[in-house]
Length: 179
Length: 158
Image (cartoon, rainbow over all chains, first blue to last red):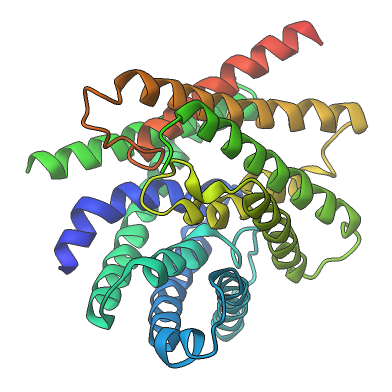
């Protein structure tokens, strides 16, 4: 189950979902970038499990609609991320560090679609790890593009990075489907 | 579920544009604040607007992949709308802001309509399995190409 989510689904999915963290800010140092990705992956797992476990015992029992659950998931992800950043004494902040698609939308997807808590744990752990590895790999590609594109303007470089990112994602998904 | 992909594309464009507008206006109003909670406020406000549009237009009946409602959640976290908060200090006047706002909005809408049109053409051949979320990698490539072409076109016109 874990490998299925990790290989066939999450790399492809989170190449799109984590894009705001990866492109949001030009960080030259790897450590703060990795901290942000790791914290968001951890928040993704906690948020997914917490909201799924509360589904029957709280949300369904008190007839709380899915739109209210989303509002709570967004607030929960934001405050969990902020708490972890405070504990890790993270200082190099970007606008998408605390609020992004990775730690909010995927828990909602699992909340809407998963049947068992075991599936949620496997899916969220696979997704979190895939995002962490994929974003770390992309950091080096992005830095290489920036070093070799001094003559282009920022927006053009950004678009070329997007193309590169999409091609990278496509190659990953094709590779794992073929293998 | 309806399979009129161009109607779906129009609906997603409306949701995308609404979320981007609400997020950027919220953040513009709060640009004096340094607390990062303002991004959470922008997302929650955009979601409220999007959910209202979703309910008013009966969006659940449109073709949106696994779960039609999921698109409302995804679109309410408007990456473009929130990113404008970073760009506010870099814009050279309101016209400059409008220029970039419409470049981003037009790029997003072109993606939706391109995808809607492709799904409309190839729907039968691929067993009605294509959805907007089936191939995010190609969506990323399409968005980048669209943004690049539109920005160059606008730079020549303006």
